[in-house]
Length: 113
Image (cartoon, rainbow, N blue to C red; front, side):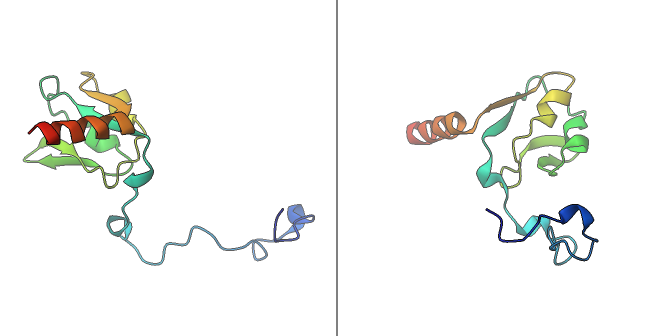
């Protein structure tokens, strides 16, 4: 049940619609960690990757970490697991895996290290 009376919504002007998606100031995306609700995670095969940077160019969240013109990893604090990087990778060097399984494997590896 809506808290607004919307029975006449098709006749509303733009002024009557409630404000939404407000960005309080420019360039604030780095301040908001959005990767916490990710269900899928990218994993890069370093042997297959030729550092063409197509993933970097196409990532909508700028989550591909590049140093000295080479892909070095993913910023998982901002990655939402959309899979564009894996889909567009011409060498199939990026695989999208289940987040829970990847996190569990990481924890096991840390425990054995």
